[in-house]
Length: 102
Length: 172
Image 1 (tube, chains in turn blue, red):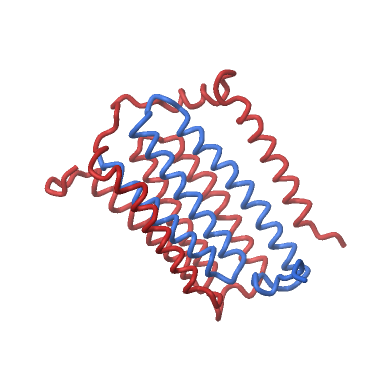
Image 2 (cartoon, each protein chain N blue to C red):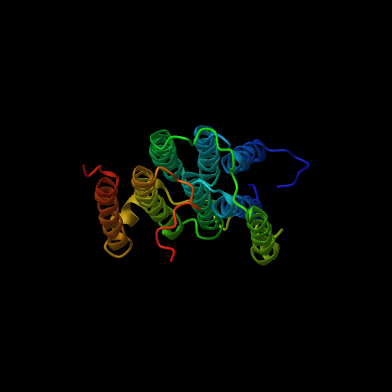
């Protein structure tokens, strides 16, 4: 079987690419896409560790399933907020959305 | 696994790695966010392939249904509802190099702290017997295991659904 460290390496690379997207993009939707990539990287690690270390215990898969749930909720609310902001401000560039700045 | 004898599993792993990381780079670099959403779907499909390789077929199915089916379409809708996203002139902010440095640093840190200790040690799983989807289903509704988080998760989904409707609704 493919060794554990290769899965972890892919997870780390995916997480870092997602983090770069979150930190560097100006568009709010693109930032949310970066968050999705990071959540998926975490899921790869969870399932890989589950398969290699505790394949008879369900904790790893159950944790990954809850990450799915939280990711779905986060995307739904996040995109709703972006649509509401777009309706009010006609922009989704995060640098222009500074309502809370003094 | 040695690189000498190239198993079909290793080939599949390489294929899914190209899909996952290539899609991720496409998402981060996309000028047109409709294409970014497509790249995201490609990347998520690669992750679903990993779940199959790791003998978690239920998670792979949920990945395709929830992530590709629901979240991918949701992103496409959001891109199309908020215009002027199809041709972004300035994709990255002024601190993009700082973000790139943070990403590279994080990758090196994770590699050093997590991957180097297990490098070459855990080649094979501890057991060839794997829990099935039935075990996962039982665990999620078992009073001694995950029934409480399961119910909280359904409550969270309901709250998020109502919240999304309320936030996105046009008041006028």
